Amino acid sequence: LTERLQTSEQKRHRFVSDASHELKTPLASIRLLSDSIVQNENMDAETVREFVTDIGNEAERLQRTTEKLLDLSKLDDDIRIVPEPVDVKQISLDAMVLLRPLAAENQVRIHCELCDGCVVMATADDMFHIIFNLVENAIKYNLPQGTVNLIVSEDGETVRIAVEDTGIGIPEEDMHNIFARFYRVDKARSREAGGSGLGLSIVHDAVHAHGGTIAVGQNKPRGSRFIVSFPKATSEETGI
Ligand code: ADP
Image 1: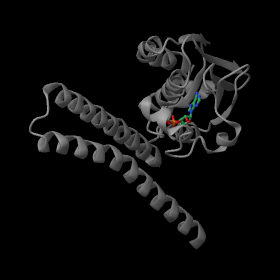
Image 2: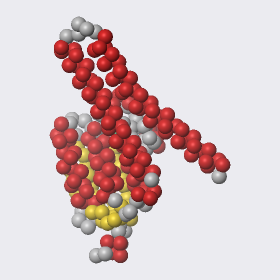
Image 3: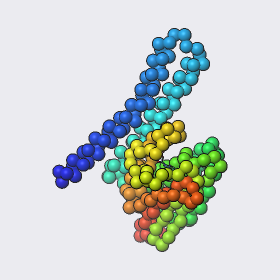
Image 4: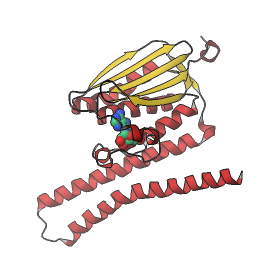
């Protein structure tokens, strides 16, 4: 027990220090940019505008990271989970409404195959986070003219959500780390795409909170494939 407590304390400590680091970097940039404006009386209007835009971008990054940290802390809180029957097709359609503009911006095509009656016991919020984060990544780490496939299907007692992309892929040696908090394969690309390194750990925790599993692999001939499986809700659970 002592050993387990020590491990969990070490994990907590590591998480707090990683989180502080993630918040510290954009804050330091904001400080630096605002100091430069204040100290340089002769700065031309165009440069001031450029610096203020950068400050806005850093603030946006902070906002995204803190929102994701809040999502994670909600997932840590066991009492919050009151599972209800969730229709995966409907949640997928809701997520697509928000993601199609990002896909268009990145010149990526989204192809959906969504089966009816794929109902699992979860929360609509968690299911939304799972699908949204996986498809968002499939768009962000794609290439122009690339494709994302979102396939929701059922196989006996299991509901399967597959998200495939034709993007840059994940190196084999990084695959086992991909769900760790703040882990990024390419920090620069993730930052540029507005990433926080928290999306996949939120997906991982949300999937496990509802008795599901998640696997990652290569997509053929290129890109990545994530497969999430949940037990299908029984007729007693759905009341139908
Ligand atoms: P981020 O906010 O950086 O996207 P995530 O936790 O969602 O954080 O993902 C962790 C890292 O995994 C990303 O930084 C990226 O390097 C890699 N990754 C996630 N999804 C994909 C994908 N579909 N294709 C290639 N790399 C991916």
